[in-house]
Image 1 (cartoon, rainbow, N blue to C red):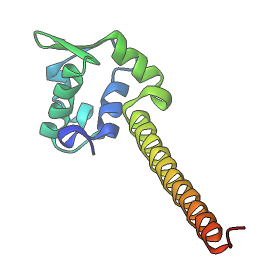
Image 2: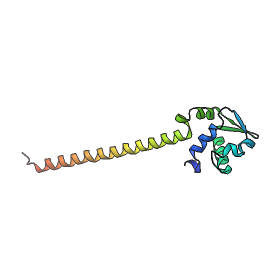
Image 3: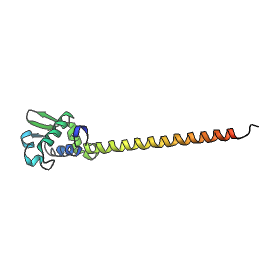
Image 4: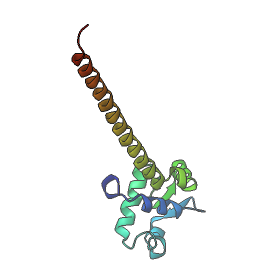
Amino acid sequence: MARDGINNLICDNILRKFDGHKSITREKMRSDSFYSNIDGDWTVVERHIDFLIRDRALKEDEDIVSLTNKGWFMMNNAEKVGYVAQKIDDVQWRKSERDGRVLLKISAFAVLGVIVIWSLIKLATPLA
């Protein structure tokens, strides 16, 4: 889940419904055959359609919803730039950031430990 309960998979599935169609009427979208395999609840699908309009993947003119260039590109390249792919990339980036920070902390403590040990050895050896 992301952005106020928006499910990335539902967004990608809505965009896939436009495959072969540039525009779809709201009336057709409200039919069970359009939304039933996306989510059983029309209000969930409608909320996601509204999100896609705000995100400029879709645009609405009167009662017709159309793909924008962004939406068309995301639909045809979903495995690279679709909403699910964006979420996967975000999770991978956050994990690599976290791993980098852990490595940095370990390195800093190791260097600090070496400095402390070296200082103790220098203090322990007689001044000649």
